[in-house]
Image (tube, rainbow, N blue to C red; front, side, top):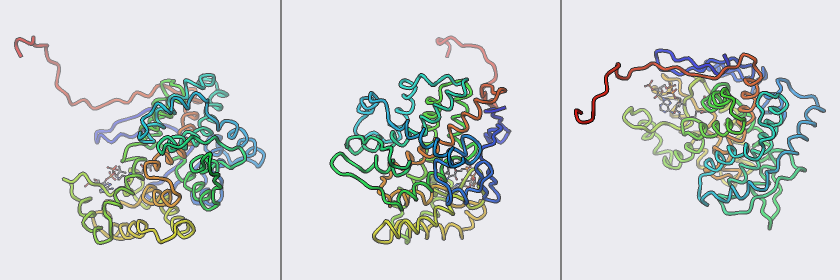
Amino acid sequence: DAGFFTYDPGFMATASCHSAITFIDGEKGVLLYRGYPIEQLATKASFLEVAYLLFYGNLPSEQELDDFEGVIMQHTMLNENLKSFLDGFRYDAHPMAVLCGVVGSLSAFYHDSIDVHDPRYREVSAHRLIAKIPTIAAATYKHNVGEPIMYPRNDLRYCANFLYMMFATPCADYEPRLIAEKALNLLFILHADHEQNASTSTVRLAGSSGANPFACIAAGVASLWGPAHGGANEAVLDMLAEIGSVENVAKFIEKAKDKDDPFRLMGFGHRVYKNYDPRAKIIREVCHQVLEELADAKNPLFDLALELERIALEDEYFVERKLYPNVDFYSGIIYQALGIPRNMFTVMFALARTVGWVSHWAEMMSEPSMRIGRPRQIYHGPQVRDYVPISKR
Ligand code: SDX
């Protein structure tokens, strides 16, 4: 059933639920959103067009997209009282900590649409989340840099509006460059959904208890933060900075192979893909274009990433284990070229993935047979035994 988990003896947690949203073939490196290949959507669609596709199941007509964009733009502002909530965080709080807290708090402000059994309220909550997540994401950045929060502008498209809220200030306007808007549009599409990954399964499990959608998405944000999941894009840049130069690559490849060393090659490997992550292929190509157009000099981190990838893909350990670059390997380099700081990379991932999370949540909640998820376990603790008074222990 939706959200039902089964554990096999190998302790491999496999979330078995029914969904019609995203299909992945890990061996062939295939990713489809509602049947459409990611390669086509990434280069031909807008992010809100893909959001519509994931949530409603089909690509919108021109009128449907126009109406959808209109509804989303109407919800981009935050309740003014949320600003004082934001002000309560330490000035140097990690943006993901702020995002997690603020998204969870939305149920305190928008409780008029949390009747999860009413499809209309489910739609309104989804619209509110898709619309407000860029405003909240930009606000976590502004809080972190000590600048005033910028209000959204309804005359800008979704990605341009986000860039505006990130980089404009009351003293200086900011006109997003088209290359930056296009790069974000592509990155958000590539990160929008990915079947039953850890954070999406978290959202489903939380939602299966009937929890309100804002609390469920906050649970997804929390799960995504881990360095083995969405936190990897930030960890890749930290790793590249630690490697420092091409001369050190071999040493770090050996570290990644050493079972006694916790170091992992961040941005490499995947639970499902045992082939090149199709999203990584697309991002790698865009990296070249963005760096050419945006970054002044050739970005040494990109050259280092290319060399690290080349060496790793020739190394027996990685080849044997079918470890290829994943979506996180190159995305951070583009975000950095757009002027987005490392501690915001996972926030960017969460911004895009909110569309997938709300789509899965709504799909599950609309199923009449939906029951609470209740994972079982393989118990290997002590057999039954009697209590021993403390005087005898
Ligand atoms: C995302 O699920 C999703 O769809 C997630 C995601 C999404 O869109 O939602 O795609 C986004 O989370 C991408 C993954 C980002 N994380 C990283 O880049 C962190 C680095 N990667 C690893 O931590 C790891 O590859 C995982 C967590 C992604 C997967 O871990 P698994 O399932 O343990 O990997 P595996 O079973 O395929 O490992 C097989 C072998 C193991 O060694 P052996 O026990 O066989 O000797 O490969 C080793 C692993 O130790 N291995 C690595 C490695 N990844 C796996 N060794 C060195 N470096 C790595 N990165």
